[in-house]
Image (tube, rainbow, N blue to C red; front, side, top):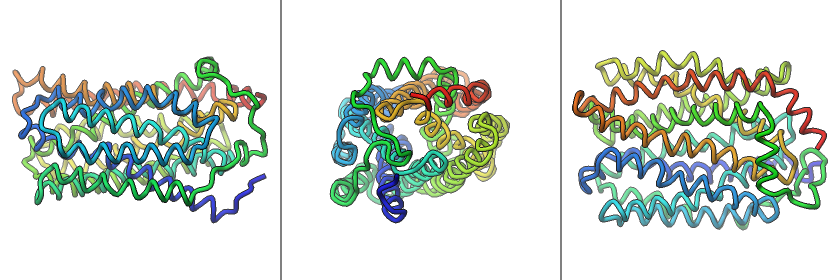
Length: 422
């Protein structure tokens, strides 16, 4: 029995969307500022890839699991508020960096703080919303990704134009502390299992137990690695396409922030919402389509993504980018929604953290880093165009990702039925 009315559920979801928006503003603002930071601090593409990839992802992904375990037995609202304060503070401190090591420490701090956001948020949403509307609710929550990128790119691009890259970090970091107070004092912590009329287990399963349950399910193995490979492409694009547009097409940070922010924000947001809606609609008729809808979307997007890096016009590249951005976000809602249904109530935050660990180590960690290394390796042959060909090669990885979503869909119904008996 749901103890909260619809208005309360909508308010909580709205606050969590804003929190997640700040999560991605603070995470991705670095992408639009890579070129001015590179020029001032004298960094290589490999170093930039480390700052935008593994420096953040290693701590974000690794700490997410113990933090999620804490969330499964403690107050998730309070945990999110503390995490928000930490990552906002380190975002602001990024503006004080004088060298690579200063920036590295700041990025690690952002990763540590942001580790405490999504796992408890996913678990809270799953307790506020019943299974038939969960993919849609998590899809709405995931709108924080494109909206955060939109505002991060707009703010970072134009603040850099007029005040420099350091001021951009200060401006986006400080408001997060105020939002943390709103989260702490206006959001209610829901009882576990409320949306399903279930009662949480008296004893919380261990991390190893949760991991074993997840990895025993073929559907999870495929959806997790499919999501990780999709994120490998997505984070590579988000991180490096701003630099590609600046280097290959001569755009300014303000222009890139505006156009790319709008593309990642609007088509990206449509993709998340539409992907969640279609997954709920088609998956309700045939469970396999909860994952198959992602496979189809990814395959359609690949040729358009390749074309982005083959045209000579900036306007053509930006226009072509719209469809792969939209389709590449179809995986967000249904991937996390189905993971929540594969485990017991006191496993949900840890399950989300395990999924995020796989996604972020492979996607956020390895993706931008791989592009940076490949760009440096290709520079001897392609000069200033090396980044173009590095990104083109990475775009093909979505074919591999689509295969995993297809295979995962074939096992999903049986795995969900087994989990429902736990």
